[in-house]
Image 1 (tube, rainbow, N blue to C red):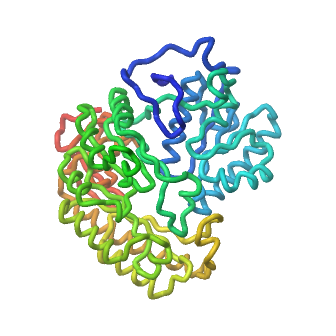
Image 2 (cartoon, rainbow, N blue to C red; image 1 turned 90 degrees about the vertical axis):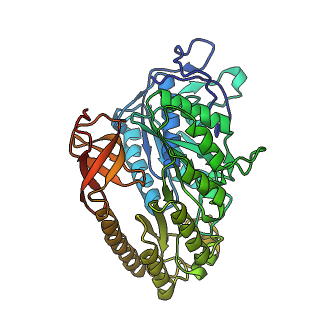
Image 3 (cartoon, rainbow, N blue to C red; image 1 turned 45 degrees about the vertical axis):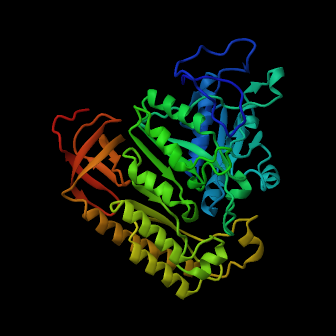
Length: 464
């Protein structure tokens, strides 16, 4: 069971913690658990979804429930969905179909669906999956918790997982700003997660401090547009101010952040990142397209020239920064010339990694309402594969440049008994020797592939 402090707060706020000390089990007069239950929690989508699932799991664990690795073993199944891409929705539908068979075999099985598919599609989901017992929007955990709890009279029938989610490994995701105000034409996020709402800085610092006491050495600050942090707070701190506060935490070794948005990434924030040793020089900065016409149609709010200037500023301050990006191919109206412009940008900027997806219409978005999906699927597939080929070639070349260098690596876990971790710039490294998970070590890079590096410890005394 996770140590935690428990009390009621709105869903988007993680509760304050003054002392990182365990508390006794819930007693009479608080929430009343119907019975000891086993839960299975399945998640698809972004890191924000993962953070939501971790928080919900922490609430379940706080109640004495037990996590299981198969839906067949559970008393409660929770499906945390994503609707950013059609593939993510298809995976959720497939999972729900399998759960339906379990529900037929065991009518007492409780099923909940949460995440970005809930909201505009709730009515459709209720008709298609009538066996689901509860639907919950992102960060609104009450309907799910109500399946395992009876409300205390003074709580108004609402329940929130009021514990910190301490991960098993040395890294953790920490949401700092929820929602998005950008309303890009292809994106469903503002409609499902709402407008930007920042968490107070002191609450974030308390949470991260608590996590570090319990073994976390690296945190990734999350936001749909993370540099929007603080715009809606009375004091109007920015992401750089938050990073300075977190850097003062003695046990915290590393700070990462995503996802960035060019217009919100100010010189002041970039200068702060460059100045703080604990902040990793690693950026996720989506460009989406290399054509001004497509960017304007997407309502991205910048030209490709402005994007290039932002990348130049990042590299002037941090020449060795790792930069990844997102690309959408086959957007409505994208011509061959538009796509060639995107390829030219990839060749020119040489990103460390490119996340590419073919455009799929998302019901409820501006593009779905106003634009024809006029690029044939075969053309989308060809363009996607071409971007993947460019990305693999450039990534292989960048990785090759690491051979012979020494890189600081945080050991995050084991894969096939082999330690792995990441460099400051986000490169995946496999280490050819035992190592303690959570250790921060220097690794001499000896081999490079297109997607990862491999090396050995500079200090031969590093042991598991």
